[in-house]
Image 1 (tube, rainbow, N blue to C red):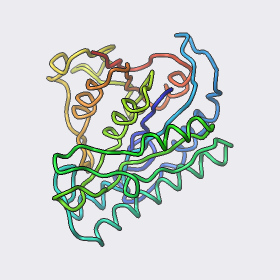
Image 2 (tube, helix red, strand yellow):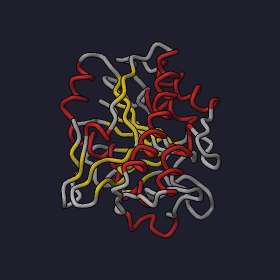
Image 3 (spheres, helix red, strand yellow):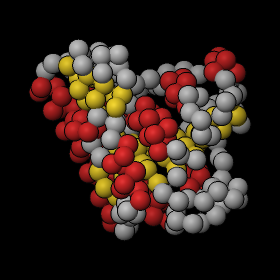
Length: 254
């Protein structure tokens, strides 16, 4: 089973509030539609079940920043919660529509309605529900969101955090993060082939240039290093290859 995160910057114009990048979203949907179950890539891996997670891009991040809500800073303002979730639902609908147009059996899973954090910040998600969707042949599509957080009202859950929780809970064999860059880049702008510890790439990891309440590349690498399954960070052009079993971009593996 494979979990893929579609970066918000990949499918939206992140500098323009609530603007979908129609061309990139169409290309992503085509790649997913072309990844037939059982297709074997160069590495010999097979795509047998797919979970998609997408980021907030110019939808969720814009509203979360306006209301000063982050993964640690909570809110008790119901209007703020509705604004953030409403924006993410609109983006999720756009993703689902693009997939549905290409006959991908995609179904939504909204973290606000299904997940929460306890007082220690530990995330709980409906992993068995997602597992049942997979076993019935669906492609669950989750997204970064705002959700209830005991003692803090509601905080943001990032797409990257969802990827880790789902990959661990579902026993994923492979994890991919599709970003706007072809991988983690070194000081010369070249892709770093593999990272096995954060210290290896600490000097070149930085934050996001656009409004992002969940952290940049550094946070992504730290999060992926928590996984047992091998992960890859790659650009949109390599999504087809990754889904076919190849290992593009930067491989993150302890």
